[in-house]
Amino acid sequence: MKQKIKLFLKRSIILNCCAYIIHNLCTHLRGFSGGIESTSGTTHSTIRNAEKQSEIYEQLSNTRPTIKKFLENSNLADDTTFPMIKRYYGKDAAGETFFDDNKGYDIIISRSVLEHLNNPIRSLHTMYKALNPGGQLIHKVDLQDHAMLTPSSHDSTFLTILSWIYGLMTKGCGFPNRVLFHEYKQAMNEIGCMLEFFITGFYGAGSLEHECEFDDIPVKLKEKAMQHFNCYKKSYASKFKDIAADNLIVSGFFLVATKT
Image (cartoon, rainbow, N blue to C red; front, side, top):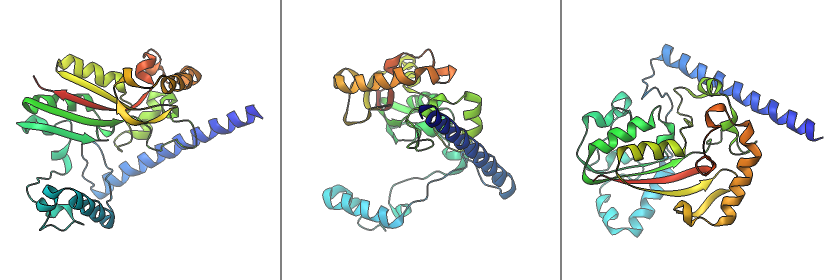
């Protein structure tokens, strides 16, 4: 029975991979034939629910007087009506190149964005250079697979896929780039800034109740994540084989960097 279950799961993963490759190919073909403008090689976009957006901004306005004043003459269902906000679209908005020409920021914030960029490490370098002295980068990075293969398989299954196959599945479509925690740490340490990381979750153990520094995470949660790691590490793609367990178990974090 166990062998049958394993065979079924392997076939399911293979079929999922094939589906993503076909989807990616079709997306690019539509782009070539229909003239879709690509942002940093990405042809996907988020469709917002105007009603939900309105509810969110209304709740924020009711709890924050400054936000209420800021939005008092705006259409809450349409954030393009909000004052004093500049918007950039298409290639001009590409995270990898935007900050080459746009500088002088006190703070740069993103939430679940960097894991979708083609080159988030370059983006971090250009963002840091674009800060004023004392300015800060605050980024939340979600290293999970964004429901590509979960919940039908364990939450680090996408790390088992060979790099060239994963490239066919995801290139230019905004799916997770598999740039993991250790690469962000290395990049920011090379920059040499004041740096803090706050962990938000582990593969195999889920999300933390509150983000915190690695050393402050409950031992039982770390142990659960390590059990998951030890169970599946042999099946991970070769690019992840030599990464320290403390880095590879992290499925999400906040990065806070201050320019000195």
